[in-house]
Length: 152
Image (cartoon, rainbow, N blue to C red; front, side, top):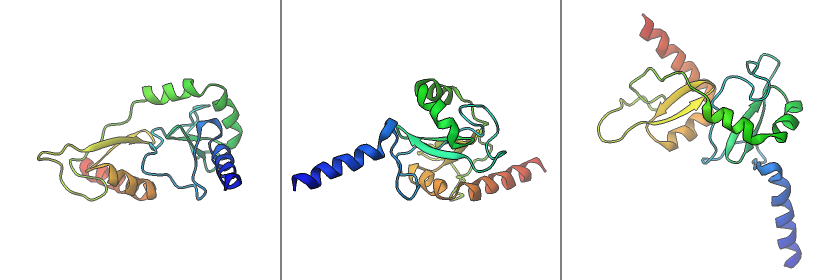
């Protein structure tokens, strides 16, 4: 039994190197904050211009970089990069409805807001942020379509 406990501690230690905890399937859990910028946190380039971004979770915050080679730079000064995230300004959310379920905001509950790729996103509650995180491309397309309708 003692060996199993030691093995469990060793596995958890390996998964949490550098303060990052990632699920084996790469999915985010409900406590993870989505990455708010559309640019690489290390070099500042627009994400996706050089292929699929390298994504990991650091202290409950999803981080996206242009590629895995930039992780070493992030690891040198993570506090600096986390401060950059804290100072980031997102483009305001233009709708009066929840992006996930479509319900109109109002009444007693205030919308739950978070940032994703440079955009403020508003949903009814935290559980809908989790739904958003499962397929962000779907909801970002929905937002772009709604914005285009507002401009008409």
